[in-house]
Length: 168
Image (cartoon, rainbow, N blue to C red; front, side, top):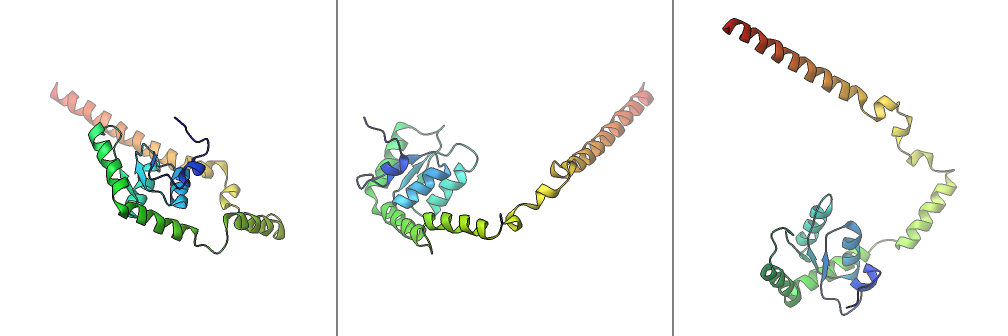
């Protein structure tokens, strides 16, 4: 059994018919770049959204890892491999992905030179760096929320205590 050290080298190989992935953004980019259909098992964070985007593009099937069986897995693999629609849609997505005004390498060079031309490009930095620490970490919002919660619990506590006093 051979496993590639680089996912990208595996995905762009002409013999690859299917890419099984958890739906991480790097794997999604590699699958789209390589024009390879995906069988996705998203776990958490951005993975369900990433796989859903591929499903909506018609180049993937999404499966739940906790409910998958040998039969459903085999059916999904056979569906992707035997149905040319997935391969066709993956190639269309790949062509759209690669149709850009400049290559990624040219983009890196452009933005590096841009930052150098504009003395560090301070206008691109986040304005959050100028906030006070209590604004950056919303201490004011948190303290207001805690105060309201405390007042609410205080009213409930003394209300229940008052009702209990009248009953006994």
